Image 1 (cartoon, rainbow, N blue to C red):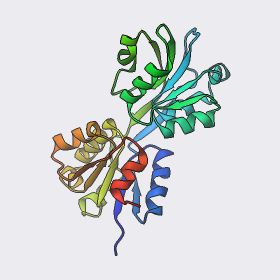
Image 2 (cartoon, rainbow, N blue to C red):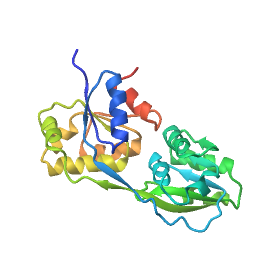
Image 3 (cartoon, rainbow, N blue to C red):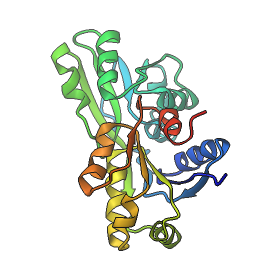
Image 4 (cartoon, rainbow, N blue to C red):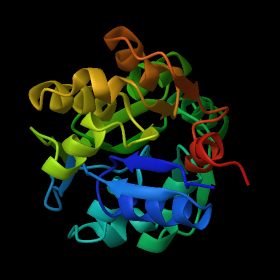
Length: 240
């Protein structure tokens, strides 16, 4: 039986990690990172003090690893959006970690459960954010100070071998882990003149919000993960 051929567009090192998991499930994987993460490891965090730190991406933990105020933050409780972010925070040196095991809405709920009215949190964030965590917890009297510690720079084209594979109908599925990366995939396919071909594979999306740009562009073979976790997306591609 021919292996399912899947295109992974995540930035490194996440892309290779996802590719390895898919290969272990019997898939043939093509890698084309459409975002390149830049760490702002000298970002001005502000004066503090804070009662806790919040993260919605493992990239934030990785950016903190080189920050001169790293040790100051590691002493604080860490509230993470999901398991992967929590694991990265632990690797960075945090000890007191709680995970919402969900999306930003779940993280806002966790913050409300773990923090008191009048508490102040430091949110280590990316430059591009889909939601507004500070607004979500403001009604509970919790203040969030957002500091950008990483940015994701978009690619402007598909690698030629990937464009050729799409044009030839040699890609069975594409994984999408963020709304922005899904939109970049479409932009790059359009620039390469292979948009129609790029819409034809199955599209495996982390959430309904991630799927929306693909639906708007005309993709019809779309599957949305049952939970916003990497393994839930992989289960769509190749169930264990």
